[in-house]
Length: 264
Ligand code: SF4
Image (cartoon, rainbow, N blue to C red):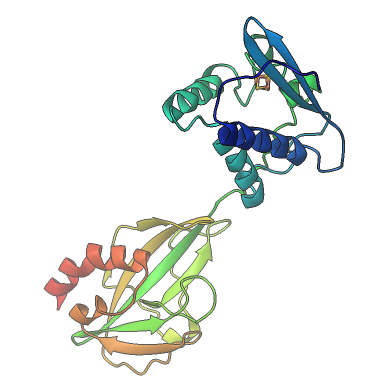
């Protein structure tokens, strides 16, 4: 590297900046490659160029590891004295020039530094996988009322909403099924029409959208042994709120409790 005149600055900050930039370049060389450092003086400024011939970050940017590499790079580029200016500039660049579809590379102020542009690969860099399509599930809540008590069941200790309490439920994937259609679990031994049907309650889970359909059945015996659950119990409406219940169950109780109080 050519020798240039001494420059003003804090040695530790300058060293940290160089270490950060060179680590970035190393991250861009997962399969090996070369890093070039050049220096020149121009108009009273010292210019340092760091170039690599790597492939850049090719991993899926939805992956946690890739995100942490990108975050680290962003932190190194950020000027701690005026982070707002950097953030605004990056957001502006993303909103007006480097758009996911058809980036305007010709007008981009950093097009010479951009690996995607230099390799003519803006259509594949950055790599962003498609999100899994959300499915929809229709779930019936069977609210069994015996005198002043209601049947609650505890979900299995493994899987979704493990160990939480709810009204007995049947689950129907919406594809090919009639939303909210009454399909009774074998153990319920009820075949008559419900005494009350409420409007469905929607709840969003990480991988699917659920619609809960609450149905009320007033029964005159409680000889039920719900299959597929950890435990079951008959409790009053007031006691339901004291059990660990999941959010969709909370929403359901909030929606129907005033009606249940009247019916009680
Ligand atoms: S040159 Fe690179 S950073 Fe600039 S718009 Fe094109 S893809 Fe985006």
